[in-house]
Image (cartoon, rainbow, N blue to C red):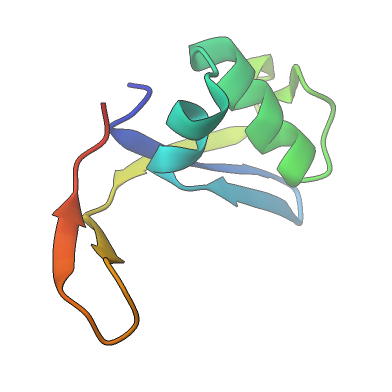
Length: 78
């Protein structure tokens, strides 16, 4: 799900990873997120449709520092 999951795309020796917040920051839908992760892996954008392409998802907790040496807070994606 866009905004919750990050992606790891792999085929052969090529790998690409995009963090969950990337799709939100760029305004991507699910298919664009998959295509961009393929690009990151050096694969054609529709490689996620191929049977031998491995697609993994993961979740992350994102923290941000409000200012240098400042308060650290958990960042919620919308």
